[in-house]
Each structure stands twice: as structure tokens, then as C-alpha cells.
View 1 (cartoon, helix red, strand yellow):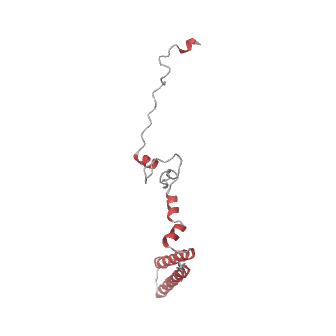
View 2 (view 1 turned 45 degrees about the horizontal axis):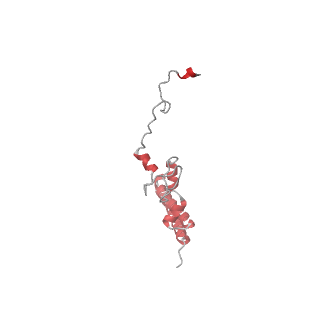
View 3 (view 1 turned 60 degrees about the vertical axis):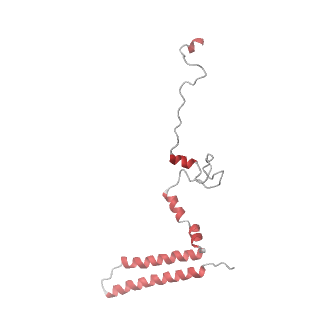
Length: 146
């Protein structure tokens, strides 16, 4: 057993290899590790800053689909416009009817006067439906009683 360490030229308190250097984080990564509001470092795995309480930007799993889901969030739209649920639904239906009235002119071509009249009647029907939906939206809007 004593001859097992004959060729060792290293002292016992030094590591066998030099320590690996840890690269400095890039400025983009450093921005994700520190709070944008107060500059404090985030606790590992935390979602909020422990100093000021602001929300941390997500590191992974943030895709275009989640961005669209955030933009089309029904509650945020409703609160942003200050409408009730029924009023917002009527607004969407009315907007869809206006788009359908515009699209009717592009989708159907008129070869005769009779065809042209039919297209105009379809447009008129879509616009009447839009007016009814917008009127319903106005009637369903809740007002604060002071």
C-alpha cells in the first residue's frame, strides 16, 4: 500500500486541477437576475422581488402564443373599456357585423343591376345587425349610481 503514491508530486492541500472559471453573465441575463425597479437580485426560483414586490419577467416558456393570450384576455379588455360582460359581447358581435358588411362587397361581384341590389341588401342587413348589437351594448352597459 505505501508504494501506491510513489509518483505523486502534488501537495495534499492543493486541488488536482485549477478551479474552473465561472463566466460573467451577459447584460441580458444580468437584467433577468436583478429587479428592473429596485436593482435587487432575485431569490432563486422567485416570481416576485423580495424587496419591492414587482413581478419578475419569465425566463422560459414565454412564447408568442402566451403573448396573444395576454392581449386577448377577456377580463383585461372588459376592464380597459369599462364595459360589462354583456356589453362587451354585444360590442364584439357588432364589430363582426360591420366587418361582414365590408367583406360582402369584396366577396360578391355584381354582373347585373339585380345582383348589385342583392349585394346592397346583404350589406344593409349586416349593418342593421351591427346597429342592433351596438344598441344592445349601450343598453347593457352598467352605470355607477352615485
